[in-house]
Image 1 (tube, rainbow, N blue to C red):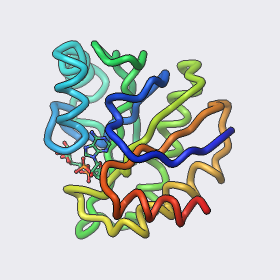
Image 2: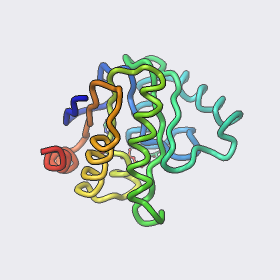
Image 3: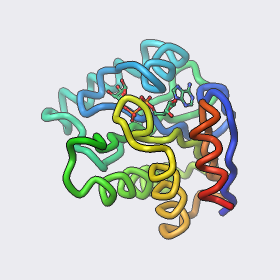
Length: 168
Ligand code: AR6
């Protein structure tokens, strides 16, 4: 498995699966969630609504992951995960690591060879970049996976630099 750190817009990545930093409603929001729904179009929201009507009536719990179509994106799947809120969730580090592990587990189940991650929880959910990056890189390395190509695609300089340090 190769880990790559990139700066840019995750919706432009040509990978099998793009991970979304969603909220438990699965019904969209701002940040990378908003960008993915905008770029992928209404098919993603439709698939999320179906999940909420079925297996995830109470919403997707923090630390878990679930896949939908990627709609118009180049990717085949969007894997939605819910990060912990820095100022709120107990056991937050374990939950953040779980987001990465569970996303990789879902990706491997689907047969995805390449996966792009954003910095889950490092925006609206308030995680300091350094800590978010270290947990992300360590969780992916420790988990190991059948996914060959794991990319972290970071949207701003501070978070990008933190991931470079964590991976270096
Ligand atoms: N590509 C890559 N990274 C991005 C992009 C993009 N197009 N846009 C933003 N980021 P956030 P969270 C970065 O807030 O902290 C939503 O409303 C951003 O700069 O998207 O997990 C959800 O619906 C930051 O570094 O996710 C939830 O309610 C990182 O993605 C809530 O926000 C994560 O920031 C989740 O908060």
